[in-house]
Amino acid sequence: MAGFHVMADARGMHVQPTVRRITTSDLWDALRLGFEDFWAKPSHYVFLCLIYPIVGLILTQWTSGANAIQLIYPLMSGFALLGPFAALGLYEISRRRELGMNTSWRHAFDVRRSSAVPSIAVIGVMLVALFLLWLYTAQSIYTGLFGDQPPASIGGFIRDVLTTSKGWTLILAGNAAGFVFAVVVLATTVVAFPLLLDRDVGAVSAIETSARAVMANPLQMALWGLLVAVLLVIGSIPLFAGLAVVMPVLGHATWHLYRKVVEPERVQQIRRPM
Image 1 (cartoon, rainbow, N blue to C red):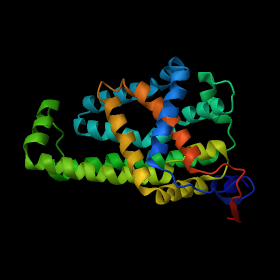
Image 2: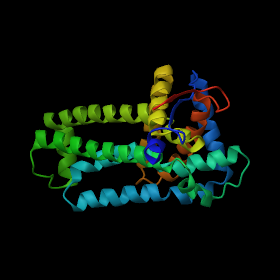
Image 3: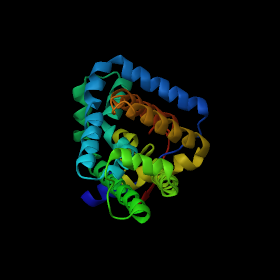
Image 4: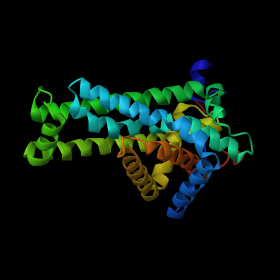
């Protein structure tokens, strides 16, 4: 039964929640509601999300000290691939606030008591694997253009990237590859984690529902992905510190986006044995 509980719901059934079509105004409304959740008790959420910029700084320092300067940008951009998983506690706080329950920052860790933890862990491992694959891909692109020798300095690396044909090829090829990874993560997890916190439907159903949400709203989801990317870049520029605000707002907004895209559980759902 434990195996079915990862792949399907607790009854071993494959659930297909109903997906709605949304409009661009729904995206802005989700952001507004996310900011309202953050503003309700911002000190709690900033404290919780400080771990995100701290980890970012540690990773940057590690790459600089390990002669892996070429991986700083892939780490900064690729770290966002883990965002849907990193925001689990924020989804939980928004869920509790929606229900009128206590929303102390301590309740962000109540996720560990969810019956969907095995399914959440499976998708989390998938995101970590994608993150590592992205780093490998970025390193392979760099090696293919500049060889195995790491950059001698940050200044020299920036100069090579901005003033040589190999550098421009690195920029274009790297961002194209990163775009593919971002699309995969968006299509498979845009509502997966909020859905699992709300209903233990299983990892397969959560991923499938995210994919159906993207297919039903391709333009809106593309805009959502662009908004997330732009806000994460803005938050990362001042030494990652801005992520302490950007991350919680986006996390809460993602919960409200889920509410707009997926019909509530009381609506008839399709169930079939796995």
